[in-house]
Figure 1 (spheres, one colour):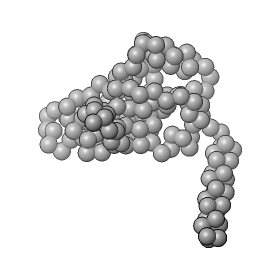
Figure 2 (spheres, one colour; figure 1 turned 45 degrees about the vertical axis):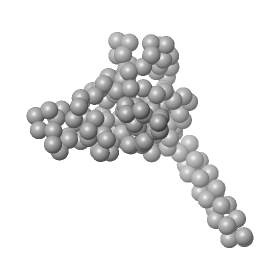
Figure 3 (spheres, one colour; figure 1 turned 135 degrees about the horizontal axis):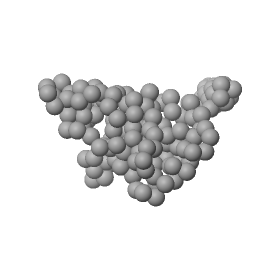
Length: 151
């Protein structure tokens, strides 16, 4: 069974960025972090990724300490290494050197018992872009509501 169980999503990612490409990557985690993630105690909202020395690192993602973890718990905001293919890392290096591109964690999920992260390559939106998106969403919602009322 190769089902995907979503554990956490970053709803602000698509609101704040134009996502051009999405990468699936593994994460280097400790045992208590995995248990805490399985309980859904992870926050991707403030997180981002960066490329340092041809390696990709996930930063500012809060994974709450595991309740029964005692001395094995680690710092909730520690930097975690992301596991990607070399060709993907080269592509990310090229894209992040271009002005305005960022690496944003989109969602965290279980796939075949392994914790995976969906990493989006995106360009930051300006305030007027966000307003346009909200206006489009509102218009679509209004159209849906009116079409329901007719039938």
